[in-house]
Image 1 (cartoon, rainbow, N blue to C red):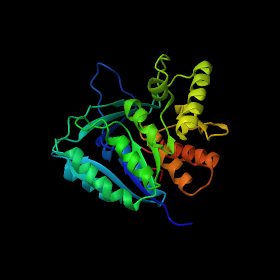
Image 2 (tube, rainbow, N blue to C red):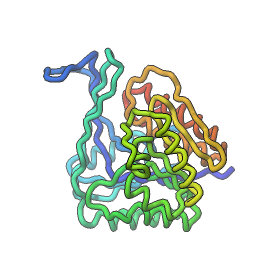
Image 3 (cartoon, rainbow, N blue to C red):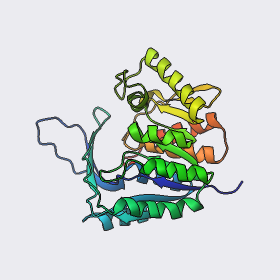
Length: 306
């Protein structure tokens, strides 16, 4: 089987600072000697896992500001191939607080500032070149402010015209606007899916309700009928739910004691795409995705499986 090539797009890079505590408390000074800084963001995490799976992947993103060179150097150290346009904007820093006592992961997210006025056109130019050499397109996460609302749909349309299979881990207006161009698979979590397609249902990220799932499954089927797109809903510690166009598959999560759950969804996306690219079948792809997510949870560094 020919080796499949991936283009992983994500337009919100992160410098990820992770602090490990035995325990930490609000309204206290919490001190630790165990802390790390990594290049991250959903696209970096996806590309890092695909690289560890020995796939050929290019990550398209932007980077600017005082951390640009350090971010690029960290990605190179991980063996990543980047196409990072200059955005004239700072790379945001997000902070993860890990508690050994509670086994908890707490994420503090800094919203990104707007990219420069030329960034959108530079990303489109780079995408138009890179997509010609790819078999799979993966788009992950929200865009930083400053990008056009039609950017992701434009990418999916270009990919579909070239016969490139698209996997979308996005939500909201971006996801709805992409569907008419026939992405192969969409992979939001349950909360994102309901907020995007069933806004009358208020679902928190870690909630699950049988009635909500019934409505979600019917919507997954509608999306396949109208657009031909498969859907995988991630359910956190409860696993995932997938509709392959004929059958509903429930994939339980592995029962583990996590170290850091940041990046598990991205590892899931990478494992799912890796297996689909190998034509291993939908059920097997869900298993591979689950295994990658579980492996990621065993490491302090996000977006790794080994």
